[in-house]
Amino acid sequence: MQKYLIKNTQIVNEGTVYSADILLSGGRIEKINSQISATNGAIEINGEGKYLLPGVIDDQVHFREPGLTHKASIYTESRAAVAGGVTSFMEMPNTQPPVFTQDLLENKYAIGAASSLANYSFFMGTSNDNLEEVLRTNDKKDRVCGIKIFMGSSTGGLLVDNPLSLEHIFEGTELLIATHCEDERIIKKNLEAAKASGRPLTAADHPIIRNEEACFESSFYAIQLAKKFNSRLHILHISTQRELQLFGNMLPLEQKRITSEVCVHHLHFTSNDYDRLGNLIKCNPAIKAPDNKAALWQALLDDRLDIIATDHAPHTWAEKQEDYLHAHAGLPLVQHSLPLMLKYVKDGAIRLEKVVEKMSHAPAICFQLRNRGFIREGYFADLVLIDPDLPQTVSKDNIFYKCGWSPMEGMVLPSSVTHTFVNGHLVYGNGQFDESQKGARLEFDR
Image (cartoon, rainbow, N blue to C red; front, side, top):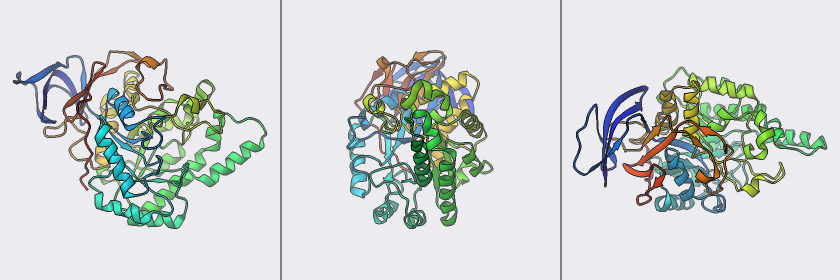
């Protein structure tokens, strides 16, 4: 495997920024020092004026394979991911067929091994009647990221709304349980009320139908279950101010049994953007009123929210052009999540060290990832070199998503990813891909 020596860079890691050289060898970080002499066979990269970050670990993506590859595939979306500095991802089970059995789960791992340019893990899916298969995942807890429960907003049997089924899953699962929390009864009631108005519904109705109450009641219920059975619960894509009262920041992340995630689109867009973007930003849970965005930012900075992710969920342009009720929910984000957060660093909203904490360190801690998420000697060399002063304009010409569009098209992002290393392999450098080496299956210390 090729060695690399990155010289004169600013390393951002574990709350500090410092100047150093770093040597990558055998897929790992061999040495970090203030100055490392040229090494035989090592390719030197000048990191002057750039920052070196641990690769982003995105704990919630939908790469649509198998069964929905007209939208995306593990290959296409992992390619977009590494171009945006995401070196590891954890992918959701709502594919076709849904991942309800161990055989289907291992089939996805086989696809990942054959085609993913980033490191990968896949959640086991749950239904009201596949408890036996779910509990078999306990035997793979060091090789599977977690169990996913849709407690709202899903089709194809993935909605788990039987209280007895939920209790059995929470009681018997030894892995982290990740939940999508929206109360379907409240959503259906709100939808019927909106339809009763007689007017055509638009994307602006989405946060009214999928409102704050629907999110809070479901998140509260999930937390009650987790406390009852002492389960390891991770609630995905928190989107409301009201839910934030359910989370604390008094314990170190390593000691938390209940953790939370916020997604970049809920930190960036508000309901004011529906007039401009319409169904392009229709997603579940909905993007809501501006006071929610402000509260999410505050909770991110004070550590009530633990992780920043994307919920990357691509659909074709045609699927987004349907009328509101039929337009598919979800938006593509994995290529632009880190550059978007770097914009907020430039704007003074968040420190670069905090971005690294929430996008790299915290996912590694939360999921107990083995030897990833930090820049440490002996750890896997999952690294991202960024130029803070190299702007990029999001356009169809530089979007790598298979769907070919982004809700951020036309936006100027002030910083760019120049190099991405996955297990010491330079998979993306200055706009060019080297696809000769695939990513690895993530492993967990549980």
